Amino acid sequence: MPDRTLHIGIVTDEVSRTLTEALALATSWGIDRFELREGGAQRFPGFTQGEIAAVEAEVRRGAKVTAVSPGIFKGAADNQAEVRRELDEVLPRSIERAVRFECPRIIIFGFGRYEDEPEGNRLHVLRAFEEAAEQAAAAGMVVAIENEPDFWIDQPEASAALLDEIGHPHLQLNWDPANLHWGGTRPTYDHFQAVLPHLANLHVKDYYPDRPEAPWLPVGEGVTPWDEILSWVVRETDLPHVTIETHCEPLAASSRRSLSTVQRLLDEAGAHPQPAS
Image 1 (cartoon, one colour):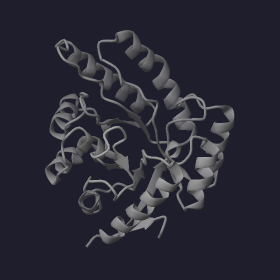
Image 2 (image 1 turned 60 degrees about the vertical axis):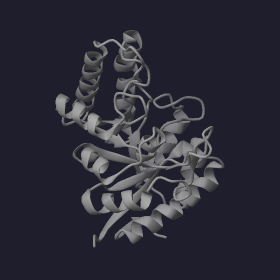
Image 3 (image 1 turned 90 degrees about the horizontal axis):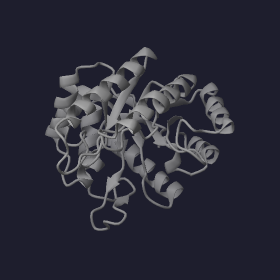
């Protein structure tokens, strides 16, 4: 049975839409690992000076920023004007601010796929991923691509094959098993094995298909097999943390319920989750 510590982090805007409140609440629960996405007015890197100062104060107190998510590469790969703006403006600003927070990774997305997409888009995708990885590598960081249904990064085997083809050590995966489930595929051990060589970060939320307009519940209350997935993570990875991405209202109460369940599941899998129950 594994015997190791595994930290639990959280996406701040899944606790509160006000960053300072999110940091304070999560800290009161014992959490000191934070993924940054939305500020009060803009998505990262468009945080206010006050929000930047609040994050820096947490880092000085010993908290860690595990990832930042500027939301790039959500459109189509053949929208080259937008891709260039994201690569030339948004990503460099994100990296610059992430370095200030001593953050090791940038989460990006995998470009939406659409019917009758030109074959040339595949080359656009490969080039954009490689350029993003080069920028991250220059700053000593990694880019972690999050899987989404009907994106170029979606099904585990195909996603792993695409990253193998590019072969850049600073290009990895932010695996979200509930996103896979949302797209119609229940996560299995074979899927986990496919992503494992590229796994840099794990999002933990729960899919609930009976409410398609808002198909998410606190962890343990939906149908995504988190007891299985977290046991695989504990046994077969060296991830230092997992990240709760609540995705359902009310944010604070749902996040707290998710935290309790993730703590219990990690403990049952043989990890010593931090914060402790």
